[in-house]
Image (tube, rainbow, N blue to C red):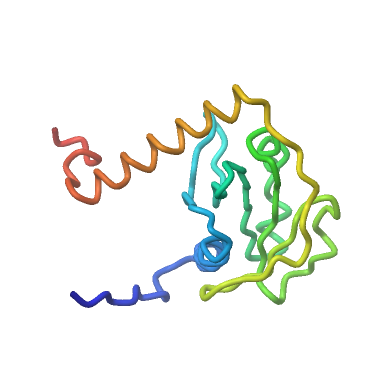
Length: 154
């Protein structure tokens, strides 16, 4: 079986950054779920689960305007042990809060430029998130196998 490369021209700029972030996190033994909804009204670009159960949120920003229009990012902090911004190489990084992590990425990979301090989640919050990540991920996999499930045709 051969695996074909997706047509990257169909991706939005933020999706290309998320793809590179996902590859970077995989190289650090993290499993990722893109566009994860930890709670109603919030959607994180990349949620990473590390080998020791650590939870990282990565918000991908493709431009100054994209960053300036994001008013929800501080709500993501209560759903992770570490929070990162991921941006392309031409992004004006001086806009980003210094206490946040920083990843420079493109569609092919990325690099952690600044590691944020770890703020450990409470055990109950971690358990709830791990269960939600597992269930959401499994639903997505089931939808690939049987698209009628997610289309509402059943």
